[in-house]
Length: 174
Image 1 (cartoon, rainbow, N blue to C red):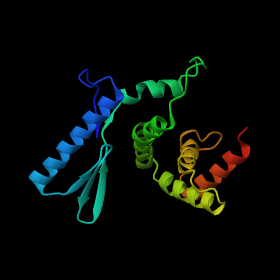
Image 2 (image 1 turned 90 degrees about the vertical axis):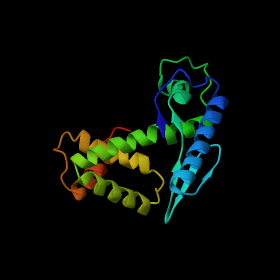
Image 3 (image 1 turned 135 degrees about the vertical axis):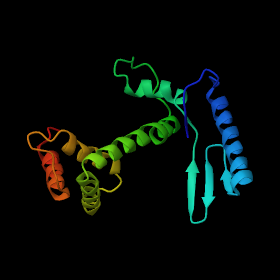
């Protein structure tokens, strides 16, 4: 669940997480009283148990990550600034960047349906090369083949896209 920015959110990160936990508790109570849906809540997320599926709900507020995102993406920042800690980077990656990348990928798949099959094929090939676990990297490579296909046309089949990814890996000036 993503909230818009508001001046009413506390500035302290601990307080922000406590407010988010209170909202998750409120959501749990409403789900149980209004719909009879059971769920488990922790300070970080709400697991909604539906008959055969469990949905994990997390509260996201961009203000919590603005400073960390700025430190990570600002190449003009002084090197004396300490980088964000691992937990902050993980939350930033999980709650901010990954959903936006997924939304952009979904939009591209609707425009170019071969992209989804090409991504699956490339991930399977990477796993066969004992390079599994680089799903985000593979998706970026496949997207690059479709969004910046020069010197070729954009691929129209997943096999051609796979060949273009291999060509990109071979010809890129690493």
